[in-house]
Amino acid sequence: SYELTQPPSVSVSPGQTASITCSGNKLGDKYASWYQQKPGQSPVLVIYQDNKRPSGIPERFSGSNSGNTATLTISGTQAMDEAEYYCQAWDSSTTWVVFGGGTKLTVL
Amino acid sequence: QVQLVESGGGLVKPGGSLRLSCAASGFTLNDYYMNWIRQAPGKGLECVSYISSSGSARYYADSVKGRFTISRDNTKNSVFLQMNSLRAEDTAVYYCARDRGSKLGMGPWFDSWGQGTLVTVSS
Image (cartoon, rainbow over all chains, first blue to last red; front, side, top):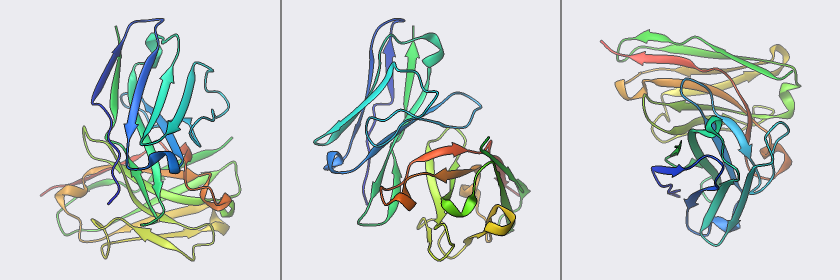
């Protein structure tokens, strides 16, 4: 089955750029999406189709996807961005949704 | 505005059953595929089941196949998950999520989520 791998944790200082990676076999051939989840809350879509932002998502959130790696980038990271982030892709061979294991972003 | 409200969770004994409901509002339900996604305590997200916009196609995770059944009633703006033969490992928050991309032929992404309903399977 298709798997997506994320680092368990990433730390960043306020105002700096945070990069969270998501790795999977030929992930660049698929669309990647990213979700933010704060404690006790439902996930929120922050990036879809590799690099598109839903309305209401700040411009500091951006995405890219090439080769075997998709990356979520948060520029000028703020304390409010501290959360768990999940990547997601579609495995067309099994017609199934795949999520990465999640990355805890700490802003310190 | 778009809203998804889950209900039906609770405490159930192993082997028992529950029926989850997801009430949709603020959009035309039959324009979207719908998913049930769960999150075990302290764990990540796992897609459990999804259903096409018309209800003609239904898919299940291997872990629930034969035990769970997804359905929808577009006339009542609702999606359901019937869960039978529940196991301790089914304990999780179950989210209803709207899939924006599948009906467009672009693969799924989930642009709206409910608040979740907790299912606890324990004796």
